[in-house]
Length: 327
Image 1: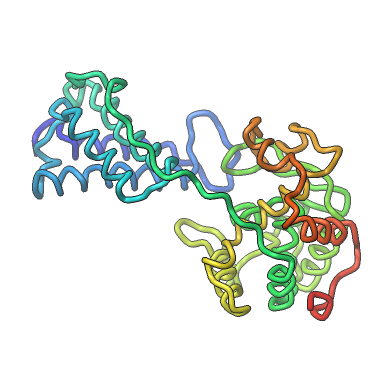
Image 2: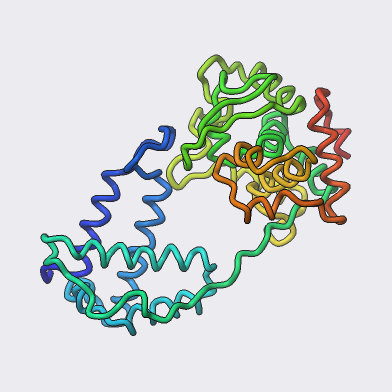
């Protein structure tokens, strides 16, 4: 292996990134990264190394140094990502991975390498724009609620009423939420997250925690064997949702993944007359920009109005529903 080669620099970079990984449940602190961030950085760095080997033969990453990279090679990789129909966001992350390699190569142990050309002068190729998630219809939502048990209904209404994604549900513990409000910190952003608990959400959580015999400090939602719902590459919420979706005769083309429930809840919350950007930030659990506000803090589209009004009325109710009421 040639000193300062791409493979050596990549190993040094990923070892450093791994040393900064914090526990998924730990609050965000300066200089640390979430395990998910480390995983996708590994993926994009390795994807670039794979591309170099494909273009120049097996073992090329052990012979090519960063200062050997040409603008044409980097632009070619960028172009390939576009031709592979990746989203603009994915391409931005992938090119950031290349940039991190180049910066890392400037360290003394890698020979203090620099590019012979200006990184900012390269041609850039953007990917496809991110497609907006299509909200489920009222009929689909009623059918999916009727097809699951108390645990499933509780997860669905918590996702809608509080904007919780799979990781949030996995981290939620008894004591962090009651009939008045909830107070916790999102693991990905470290931003304090608190607000009022919708009456229906508390009714479901109260009933489910009693039935599941959860005590103070226990994870409210976990697998049947007691494992976290989200751990490493395993997302048991998505697996459960996909099976539930198939049970009612839907698929990924006709009904989005579980995360769409967060968007559904944000649409209802953001369309309230009293909602402010600050309120939206607390509800979402991240710094809501004007772009986010534009997505959610607007009048509800006519085709979604009946769905949003139904959700709003349900969240204000404290009556636990029976399956027949979703028919």
